[in-house]
Length: 190
Image 1 (cartoon, rainbow, N blue to C red):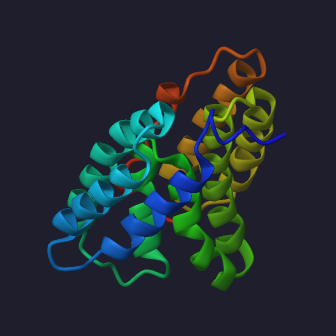
Image 2 (tube, helix red, strand yellow; image 1 turned 60 degrees about the vertical axis):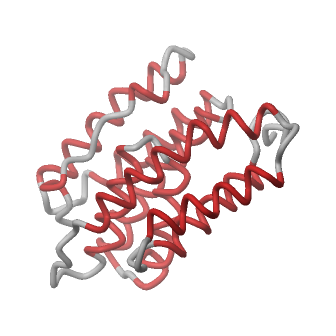
């Protein structure tokens, strides 16, 4: 059952990701994002849940924009969306890491598609935890680990193993979002 809007502002979550995505790679990305957040904040005035959500997420998105601006595009399939998803995941923006990878996943085939799905499931699993579903988190982390075991790079395999180790903690309702493993920049070989 999805979390009620008052507990986890799903529409606001989606709007922030759309704003973030529209600012990626643009001139004055940080200013555009901050202006967008100001407009959203004015529109959502009166909701303490939404205000707290904005206060929590906006600085993490800004840091993600800064890190994304410093990326060097690699001549590797899906490198940019994977790098941006890594930044988002490491900022605790788990849903956004998942959403960032969806277009690449739709284009991928074979093992690459499976590994991208594993990364997406990692983000979705941690998002489930944020929205109150420890059981859903545990299941998605296990699925992510199985798919990441197929990655060529040792870094993604290690990330998958770390996720698998967290699944029992999620199942016991002992896992917190801040316990998520970090995905190393060097760990992105599909």
